Image (cartoon, rainbow, N blue to C red; front, side, top):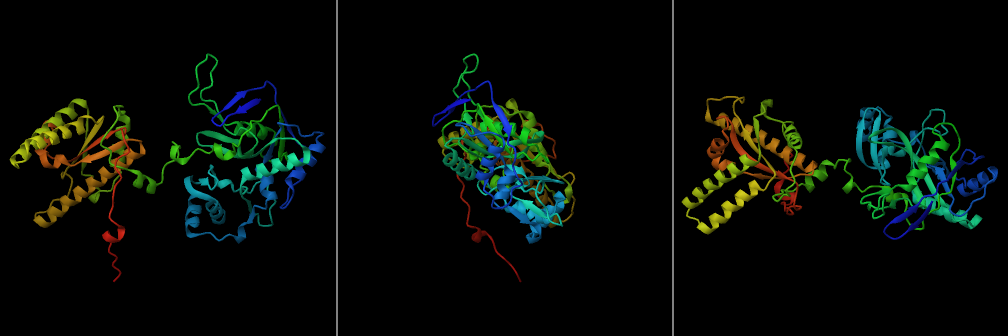
Length: 469
C-alpha cells in the first residue's frame, strides 16, 4: 500500500498483494527482556531481514511481560468500592481493584462483565487486566496489566530497529478487544509508530467520482486484526508478525488517534455528574421535528420518579401543532387581561404576549404536566390536607425533572414554563382536560438552536447548614 500523508489527510493507493508471516523462535518473554533483541533473533530464525516499509505487529502480552507489568494479587488490598463492585460482577475483589486503578471510569457492568475506560482512553473489558497466558504461582494469583505507554514503546522499538538494521519500519502493539454491538474479540492497535494509524479519506472520490464526506479508516486496527489471525488467542505462541507489502505513511499518527473523544462518543453515557452540570434550559429550537417515540421515552423516564405513597399523581398531555397554537393564543390572551388589569404599559404587554406565543409555537413539541389528587389520601383538617397536596406537587416536580434530564440525554433541549399555574382554568378549558387534572407547567421541547445561557448558583456554603447535635 502506498500512502502519502498531508497534515490533514492520508491518501491511500492500495496494493493488490500483502504478506503476513508469524515469526518463529520467539521464547517465553520474562521481565527485563530486550524486545528488540528478541525480534531480531526471531527474524533470523525465520530467514527474514527487515526491509523499508515492513510492519512489525507485536502482541501486547510480551510487551507487558518485558516491562514487568505483572502484579501478584496477594499484594493488592481491595477498597470497599472494589468489594461492592466485585460482588456485582462476580470477580475477585483484588482483580477489580487492579482494574479500577487502571481506569478512569466504569462504563458498564453486569455479572461476569466489567467494561471500563482505561487511563489510555480505550473502552475495554477489565482495563486489559488479564491472567491468561501468564505464568502463575501456586495460587493462580498473577495478573498482567497493559503497557504503561504503548505508543512510546512502539516509537522506541522503531528507532532501535532502524539503528540496528538500517530499515525504516512501522511498529504496532496489538491486543484483543470486544465490541459493544458484535460478538467475539478482534485484534486492535493499542500502540503504533510509523504507520498511518488513522487514514482520513474525506474529500477523496469514490468509484463514481462522488467525494467521501465522513470516511476515516483505522489502518492500524486493520493491520492488527489481520496479524491476530496468525497469532491466535490461546497457546499458539506466535506473538510477533511481520507484514510486508503495506507501505507506511510518513507522519506522527499513533494509536491514541484511534480513540474517539468521549464528548463525541454517542454510545457511552455521560456520568450523572456530567448530565446534571451540562443540562441547560433551552428556549430556542431548530425546526427539526421530534419523533413521538422519543417524546414517549421522556414520559417513561418521568414516571420512574418517586412519588408520595407511590400514588403517582402526575398526568401528561402531549401537545401537537394545532393544540400548541390554540393553547398559546388562549394563554396569551389571559396574560393580556391580567397585565392590563395591573395597569402595565400596553406596548410592554404586546411584547410579552407575543414572546409567550412564539416561545410555545416555535417549539416542535410540548408536554403539559398536570397533577391529580384523585388517588392521594384525604384528610378532613386543613393542615394535613395542605401537606398531602404539597406531597403531590413535589412528586409531580420530580417527574418533571426526569423529563428534563432524559431530554438532555436524548440530545434534546427543554425548558419549563410555569405560566399554566396562572391560568389553570383557561388551560383546562382549551384542552378539554378532566376536571381532576390540575395544570402545573408546560415543558417545551426541540433540538437546541443554541447551548443555553450559563447559569449562576449560590456558593454551596450559603445554602447548606450542617447540624450534628
